[in-house]
Image 1: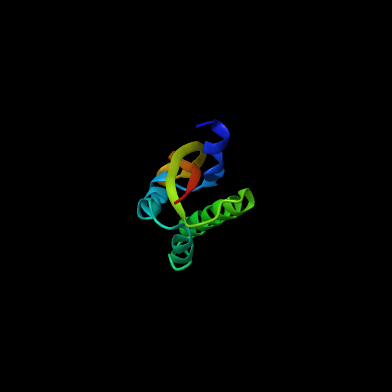
Image 2 (image 1 turned 90 degrees about the horizontal axis):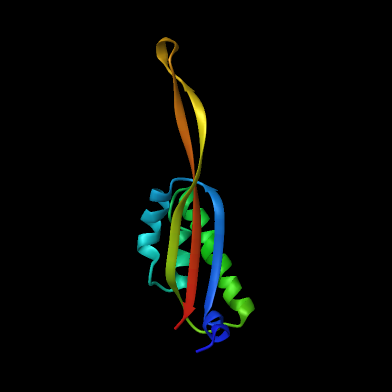
Length: 116
């Protein structure tokens, strides 16, 4: 099977430098793997929090990428890759004149859809 045929079966959406902990994105991604993409997109509307909004945007982007590539039929979420990105270190002032450091995490997310 040549590379062009293999690429044409998958639709990918990727986003880097998203503010948020990768662990929180993983909790949402566990329930999404292997499910129908349209069903998950509708279910993410009713999940609270900013993490669900970001994941919905990525799933919708992957669906539109699949439509633009001409992939029709039922789309299933094949894999969701979530990785840790860079951290910003900020100053956190504490009591009695002490200072600590606060970490502001970023994440990288990749959603892959396949045609069934």
